[in-house]
Image 1 (cartoon, one colour):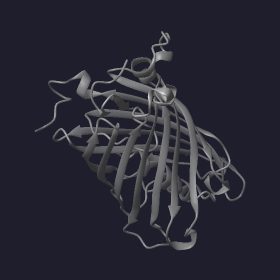
Image 2 (cartoon, one colour; image 1 turned 180 degrees about the horizontal axis):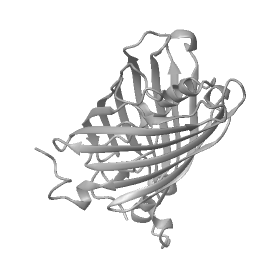
Image 3 (cartoon, rainbow, N blue to C red; image 1 turned 180 degrees about the vertical axis):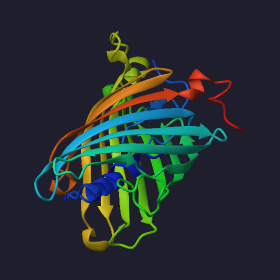
Length: 303
């Protein structure tokens, strides 16, 4: 549930800490609507709930206000635990390593994030699903050199829509799907030190497993038959303080490989404007489906 609360707000926090201008086969569970399985995306959250564990590594380069280069490496985790079949709890964190030649390097954990997410609606015929949730990043739980002292609360709306209900004449368009997330970041700080903002984003994906199973079996070999090309657009619009009205974010093209028990993914991070950065970064993901690996124990809902 953390992923979207991730880029835009975390990127802004990293920028502030660094001192530069860019402030700102198919799975059996998870996000399933009819014949559609929505994969676990990297920067905005999918619309489903499940017992899962996610690990991501990120690298991006930027420049400080003085023009000096700075490398930012991150390693993040998130554990999602089903309370009921429709309600999940999450906890996550991120270790940040900022390397700058001017001696302003810093490293440590960012604030811990906890969340609740409820799967509210599923329409199998039209491959549509929607969830609501709340993510809280707890101020003061991370390293002082990295994390903020204030907390941030983000109520979110998540949705996913597959195009499997298109007519047969448009069969090769049916593997397309979109997902999205929308939610305000509400901080406990004043507008100068912790500006409120609106997080928003969408993903566009094309499922080759769906193509093979629901449209036409092209007898594609592995790993191609398990790939989902994707483009994510995580964005953040500042709504208060000196940055009010400024939008930052990235365009993230990539590939997801998934099977019943988990998935691997890689995406580039391309800044959408100068305020978002000046260099392309990379994200790598490894994700495990506990509800399929351990269906009778660790992956079983509490109730």
